[in-house]
Amino acid sequence: MSQARGIIPPGLVRLAPTLLPLMLFIMAFVLPDHMFSREQSTTRIGLGPASWPNAMLLGLAFFAALWVLRDIWALGAEYRKPSLSMPVEDSHYHFGKAIVGLVMILAYGWMLPVIGFALDTALFITIWCLFAGLRKLTVVLPVALIGTIALLWLFMGLALMPLPRGVGGFGDFSIWLLRATGIY
Image 1: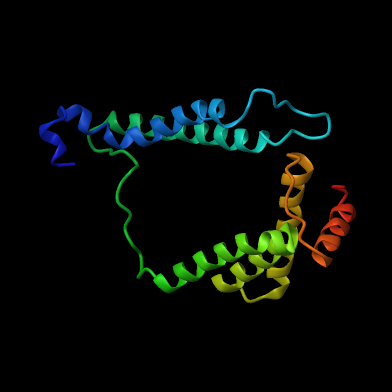
Image 2: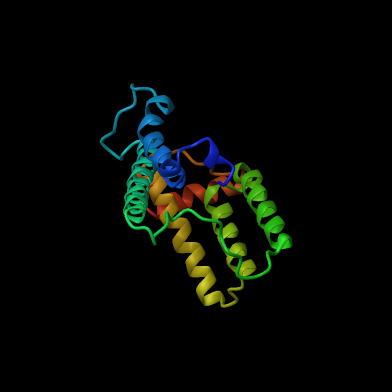
């Protein structure tokens, strides 16, 4: 920031951290025009496949607008500063855990077409909770099951997004689960 002071007028240097939320706000309204064809429309059964990304972009726009307003408010007084700043590390960063987390995410994506969304997601949530330190199975299993069924309903029931069911017996189990939960 100190190097930019010679090029950018001093008042504008203070506005630099506000550029990120401002750009996020603008992108949230520009991106939908480039992501989906205009032929898509909502259906009678659910919201349709474009509804989830559109909802995420509207949420992004809302929170980016709040961020911009907060930064403008902060710039109004000399003692306040914009919210974007370098994070302060509370403790030592554990690279081993980060690598295991990344491997878990890659394994999740690789196993998705093989065992299906429902089983893969439940397994992922369970392992992630155990890896994070939760040891009570009376907490971990309900979180994994409720989370998986909620995601199934959100994506397949409401947004009508086709998700992988798996192959062989995994596919049969996925179809049974979708019928049991009322999605199919």
